Length: 233
Ligand SMILES: *[C@@H]1O[C@H](CO)[C@@H](O)[C@H](O)[C@H]1NC(C)=O
Ligand SMILES: *[C@@H]1O[C@H](CO)[C@@H](O)[C@H](O)[C@H]1NC(C)=O
Ligand SMILES: *[C@@H]1O[C@H](CO)[C@@H](O)[C@H](O)[C@H]1NC(C)=O
Ligand SMILES: *[C@@H]1O[C@H](CO)[C@@H](O)[C@H](O)[C@H]1NC(C)=O
Ligand SMILES: *[C@@H]1O[C@H](CO)[C@@H](O)[C@H](O)[C@H]1NC(C)=O
Image 1 (cartoon, rainbow, N blue to C red):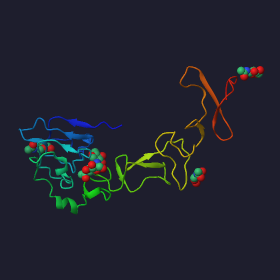
Image 2 (spheres, rainbow, N blue to C red):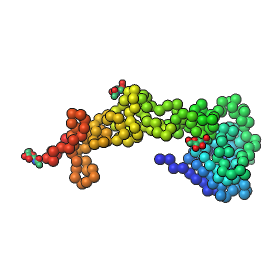
Image 3 (cartoon, helix red, strand yellow):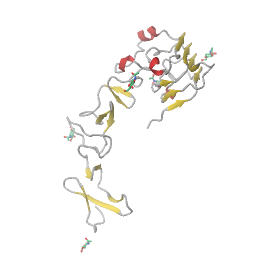
Image 4 (tube, protein in one colour):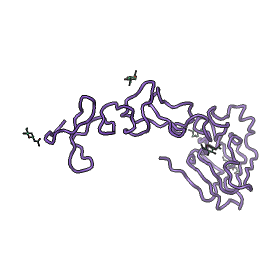
């Protein structure tokens, strides 16, 4: 699970390791509250850096304060960020001075990945879209999920590709699962124990009680309880 970051005050960055091409260490930063502002005015200041994109792909809200981007000679992807959607009040604005001209950026190919919705992004490639026009796999915008072919097989849930459980039997030309768990397979790859697909029927496993459970697979691949007497599968 991803833990998103919230900054209460402001972010001020004026030096950064040359070899890092973006602020991806902050890729999980979701909100800058701006309750405390730099110089009483700014909630995000990025100056004098050599990087080519901000890469703040999770940033959806700057609650208060101005954004100042200045003297970043290589910085692209500034006009591809929907700043007005990120701001929360009408006094907020972005001040940009002496960065790389954004039309030069475009000519050099610093454009959003083609599946970014509305050509909005924080940087190069499928992981930097603000929103996807297609579907989302992990952090990447993709055209389609592996529902009926391709591996691993997936199911689409709320615009995202969710991997089927490895114990699901791959279906060809129809969907393999309804969700991520081993209880949501269309069919089991190995055996079925109650509602769950399993690799082996439980043999000597302590399930809910302290009494070990012994099961064997019947001819349909369903796990059946051994007679009380049996000691192993
Ligand atoms: C961000 O920077 C890191 C480290 O320099 C690099 O590996 C990564 O590819 C960059 N991501 C983008 C989207 O430019
Ligand atoms: C900009 O950063 C360089 C190092 O990358 C440093 O030498 C220089 O003093 C900085 N300039 C300002 C105005 O902060
Ligand atoms: C991105 O999509 C979400 C929901 O899918 C929506 O709430 C949000 O407004 C969109 N953002 C932009 C900038 O369009
Ligand atoms: C689907 O195709 C794969 C590879 O051709 C095969 O191994 C598998 O048994 C097929 N699954 C079904 C349910 O037909
Ligand atoms: C256990 O197995 C023996 C034969 O090996 C049989 O006589 C006995 O009835 C079985 N007990 C139970 C509870 O099934």
